[in-house]
Every structure is written in structure tokens, then in C-alpha cells.
Image (tube, rainbow over all chains, first blue to last red; front, side, top):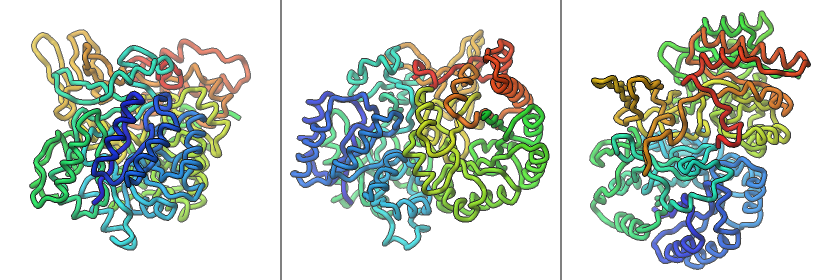
Length: 295
Length: 333
């Protein structure tokens, strides 16, 4: 199985992003996803910066994928998407149907992002015939659903597309037109003053019982809990998962990757470090299920 | 051209109310998990659907069948049979979100028009072009995330007709892309046709009159003795950061775009959708009557003025008893 580093969901300063990827070039990951996926107003990184980072990572032997904006609303965002597809020379992770259309119209392969709602084998087959080279399993989908997809897929395991699963990080749960970070500061989205740069890990929300619940990141809502499928690595392998995705965090990402890399080479399963894995077992996503549980 | 008024019906009685009070089209779901309001006791059997279509067609109105949830690999047969059932009943369009079902409907029932459901999460002309080229959709219901200016531009550049949400409960997330409910309860709009399901709601009343409400194990809100307590939809609870508890995502309000009617018409929106298949005939009657009156006033050609009576009648049936222009009004975002 290959290890991948997902796109940075948060808004970090330009220098921090460059530093992060300079370090990533030395980490044992095979694939790195780049690009701004949450808000087109986040412009610390210019196109040239991303190109520089892409070169650095490719020189370090990584496959580089450009991840597209999760919610596209403005024409300027469409134009930016077209430019990336036409000139970027990078594989695209399509995070909405505009990006799928764009890649397909240019006859280019694409990775289908986790929010495209590919819940059945016919949908996978349809997109595979239109250029999808890999898909990221939906955040709410788990082992049972992946097994069913594989069982039903026309042409069987040999033709089944490469499969990527989020194994570490906060779960991306929802997207809105509203910027929740601006709202938390009592600002409107048009007058946000890029305040999300003050929150390199988003804004944590507790319930009124002071239990961690959600995390606000611009127009995105994440879980406060960190998903950890480390103890499930053997299940992932048995289900033919080809790519394991780690979500970047401001510190400690290298150690997380190291842990999973060791887990891949070890005979015994990894000890639990994260908070939740419920979706993998078909349970509420925030729950934790023991890896000894039959799937 | 006048805009079509598309009203909800979760039962034959609500259907009759919509028909009686002037809906141009009525959208319904079957009594199974193939639609986004799969609530106990709600929706239509093949027989009641057939009868509803007969009644609507006798009065020159239309019936749309919503099949807007996402089937898993082993569930495809039920969803396809439900499409077949709708076509056999003579529905005027299928409202679909999922690409394999759209593909099936386009190939097997090419003569029945296909509308892209709001659950399909298409927000740009390019995304709509994909669905139009691949599946021949003729209309799309767009997610409640675009501002009015964006709706106007989308209408100008869209390859298909645009239907928008005009009134009802306000989903504040991009429809089809919200997993808050499954995160907490294991049940979601996408896969189960429910959000924040009632069977997992637990109210607790404390001495002194304070109430608190949970969804599953998660505390969604607390209310003082005099405070209005709303249904614990996940995105409308009060949570806390560094601050006092606040409505971090949205207040318990509903969408009401009556004031935007002339601009929506001018933009070229072809149809206005009223949310609420889970609501009863009284809601459907009230809302259909008011919107019919407003649309007729608009179509009369006389200068359009909002009647206070319309707004008060709508406010009376709105969730949370407050209404908002929602994302159409840029400052909401």
C-alpha cells in the first residue's frame, strides 16, 4: 500500500506551507496532494509557489496531485480550475462535478475526491470509463461498503480502481456557503479579513457539556476528533486498499507518517492513538470500535 | 413566462391540499428509502402514486418523483424498481441525484424528463453541463448556497433550466455533502433519507423548568424555562469555542424568499420549490396559497408589492418562527 499526504485544509502562512513541504519531501510518503481546497480568498500561496512546491516534491520522487476547490461558486474559480487543468501538467483530484467535467472534457485522468458521493459499483464503473484512475472512499463509507463495491464491480478485482482511504486526521464532514470562521468572529464572509489565518488548526467547538465536538475551518466543518485507522491496517490491506491518506496538521505530521509506515511493515497491529473510527465499522463516525470487532 | 410553483406532498391528503391551492407541480417520494424524507408513515405506495398522478393530470398539473438518496452497491435493484414504478405511474419527471441512477433512467426511460436533485450538489454551469451531456437532464435544483447574484449568473450561463428553493427548512450545508448526521447518529440524508432522526432525540427536563436536548449522546442545546426550544437539528444547536455558547452554524430559522420574487423571475429561474414533504396538509395549504397568490400578483404585470398578510401567514408555519433570506442575501454568508 502507498501512503499519501492529503491537501492542507487550513490556511497557513506562505512560509509555513513552504517549510511543511520541504519537510514532506523527506518523509516516507509516495503521493502528495497540493492546492487550496476550501476558499479561493486564501492567497498566501500563488500559482508560482505551488509550482515550486510541486517541483521540489517531484524531485524528491513523490507523485504530485493537484486537489481542486471543494465548493466552486464564482466564475473566477472556474477560470482558475481550467488554468490548472490545462497548464498544470499534474494529475487532478476532482472535489466537485465542475472539476470532473473539466478533466473529462480535456481527456485527462483524475482522482475522484471523497465528496463526490460514489456509493455503488455502477457509479465507480461509470467514472472509470470517463477517466477516473483512483477514488477516495467517502468519509462516511466503511469496510462493509468497500467490500460490497468490490464484490459487485464488473470485471472483478482486477479492474477495480485504485482505492484511497483517509486513515488519519479530522473527518471532513460538511461544506457550506457560509464562512463559519468569519461568523465566529462576528464578521461577514465579504469582510473576513482572512481571519482563518489565526487558526492553523481551525476553531474547536465543544458541546455545552464541554466535550469536543466539531472544528470550524472556513466554509468547512470537520470533526474535533481525529480518525485513526492505524489498528485497522490489516483490514485495509485485505480489502485491496491501495492508498492510505494522512491529513496534514501544523505539527507532528512527520511522526504520524512514520507510525503508519512502521505499521505497514509490522506483524502486529498498531496501538490506537486517535479518537474515532466509527464510519469504518458502519457506526456513527464519532464512535470508537475495537479493531477486534468483526466487520 | 411564469415561474412554476413546485410544492411538497408527503401524503395523499397533503397532495390534495397542494392541488387544491394552486401548485403547478407536486413532488412526492415512494414509501421506502429511495428519497430524502424517508420518515415513518410518510410518502406514497405505487397505488397512491398512480392515483395522485391521475388527479393532477386531470387538472393539467404535474407530478415529480424524488429518488434523491444514494443507493449502496447491494441496493441498486430497489432504486431502479422505484424509477420503473414512477415511470409506470406516469410521473412527469424524475428528480435524481446519483450518477448510476441518472444513467439508468437516461438509458431505460429516455422519454421521462430527468431533473438533477439538490442532493446532486451542482453549483456551476460546468457541473450542470456534465449532468446534461452525460444524462440529458433538462432541469436542476441548485443547492441553497448561492447568493442571488450568483443565481442570476448561473441562470444566464446554465445549459439547463434552474429551479431554486423558495421556502421552508433551511439546509445550510451544500446538500449531498453533509455528514454531520451520520457522524453523530449513523444515519444521513444521503444514505437513509433522514437528518438528525427523531428516534435519537432525547429531551430531559430539570427541576426549575430548564430543558436540554440530545441527539444520540451529543448535547445539542439547553433552554431556559421561557426560551423557545427548537428541534435539535445538528446544524442549529448551540456550541462553544472560547466564547459563550452560540449558534456556531445557524439559528433555528427557515428560508423565505418571497421578497426576492421579482428578481428570481427576472433571472430566468423556471421553478420555485417549497420544502416540506414531512409537513402536514395544513402547512402545504397555507404555503401553497400564499405563494400562488404572490406568483399570480407577479404575473399580473402590476408593480409587485409584498403583502404583510403573506409574510405573517408564512412566518406562522415556519420552523423556528423566524425566516431569513439565507444565502441569497450575501451578508448571510
